[in-house]
Length: 336
Image (cartoon, rainbow, N blue to C red; front, side, top):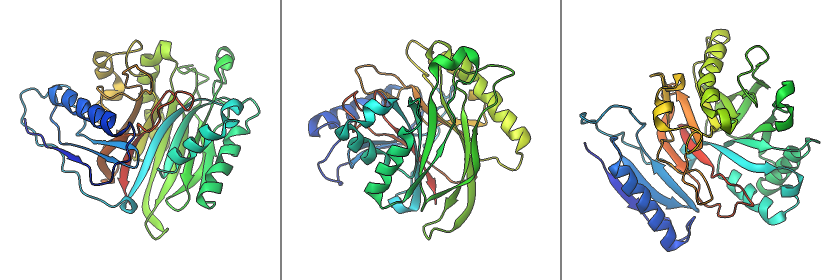
């Protein structure tokens, strides 16, 4: 097994976790990954309060294989489009009424080019618009959103209704058509139906790159997380049957895919772990802000996204207070 580790401190001393704590946590992550039964090409570095982790996707059985890790290219930020998933814990009027929390959320979202947000809880449905205004006030009117109806439309799910939203930088992405909730009335797989939307990727000049992709975001019910994760394969297959020309698909969100809700062995047996799927966030990751160590938030792509997938993903650990969220944002890059 071959691996490469490079810790790069060329971006200055500002860290997500404090100068010493940041190094200790990053080195702990490196140590865990070295011990893991997987072939790694790993780079951990710090930049703008973010720990970036670049890692080859997991393979279930590679103990005896000597496989070289992916060479991660050194790219400027403008050369990639960065997509994140972020569960903003109980995102409603109370949170929007806390300026210091909103300020940190704005700073966090503006690091990316598109963010899938889960757990919006506002019966009046005004919070997503208020937050979009905050993004545009801070960025010069560069952002738009694709907002879902309230999910949990089945009668037995209405006590857990939430909204999803994709916030996106309009100089990098353009929405295609209108997003929609997956129609779950027949099978009732989900407490909160996935939200599906398609986007065109723009090049650095703001013109069409000739590439578009479709995103599926989900916040699973913890008690039946594994069943809902399994059902996501059916959602993807249903979409492909009706949209055969679109093969660039990404499933991302709060899967609750770890700890007491499911385990690695169960996930490896999921139909969402069939060979055509690429799980970017591995089972050893910690995407939670509190003292727990759980890989709840995941990003799953269908194959290599037409060669646009850089192969990098990261966890933004700049959030330290659960008043902001109990989840870290998790992201990946596409070539522009």
